[in-house]
Amino acid sequence: MQLLEGRMGNAISSVLRDAKGSNKSRREMEDVLNRLIVLAEVKATTHYQRVSTNPIDEDVLPIDKILRRFHVAHCCVKRDAGAARQAIEQYLGRYLKPEIIEGLTAVIAETLDRLMNSISTKSSSEVTSYAITIGKAGGIGRIDCYLFYYKFQTPDLSSILDNCLVTSLIVSAVSPSKLHFEHLAPLAKAPYSSPLPGESDEKADARLEKIQNMLLAEMQASFRKRSAPL
Image (cartoon, rainbow, N blue to C red; front, side):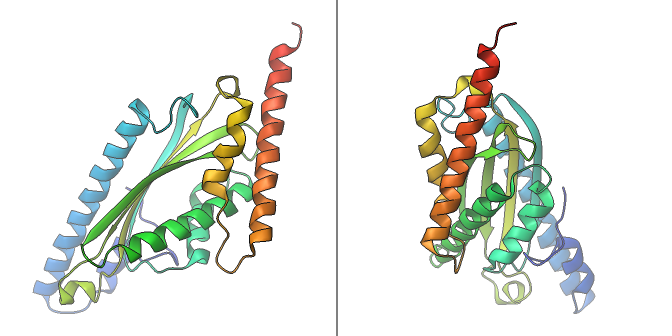
């Protein structure tokens, strides 16, 4: 499993490296973190199996081929849209249009905020979602996302390992020939209508409109290519 360093949270390896205390407390922490790694792998495998066999809304946005998958575990996650963008850029920036990266940042920041707010009466919460995407070099795709948020209840652990997040991302190609023009606007609006923190609704609306227009252009280009004489 890949462990992400950076502002979104602390990688498990760095938490172990920087942990202070007795050998016993360090062993206890190492045991907990190792269980978190196993949990992340189990959650990611379950998510992959679900996406590869029965993805959400397959009739509207069917998967043509799964291209890549990532899963990461963070501790000490903060409500920081800049950190979320940094993480998304690291994993997806080379593959997706900048407007898509911005839109994904907004929706993931909003989702993470919702997960953290729902934790008051329980120790964990989770969400599964997907979004239509546009590749950096063109082409329509899909990203499936699973977020599992966990908060330790014991004071000793929560002071060090507060706000743990397991994330699974699956990037897929979509064949435009299997899409319908009337589905493009709703498919874009669902994930990309959210503004970034501090961003005006007008700017978010302009980004959404641009994404919708880019999707339409991709569909039209694909249609022309299929209709061209041999």
